[in-house]
Length: 88
Image (cartoon, rainbow, N blue to C red; front, top):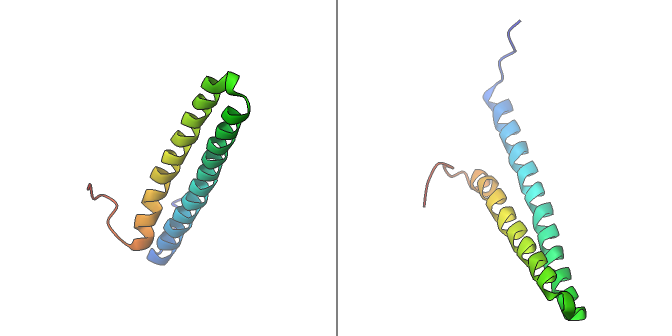
């Protein structure tokens, strides 16, 4: 049996819900990145013997923050109503 056809309003609602889910996921990843970055900085200050391990943790925190920014880019463009295929 063929799947029922969806209306434009249903497709738009699903796209908006997906953009909201992506934005929430990005917030979670960014929060973890900030926490890792902060805790690595505190750890490097409290235990300078393990500074290289904490610097590695800082790098992981920065990578998580960058990933969060790139994840949210598509949903921000969706909410602004711009074309997501533009390359700046």
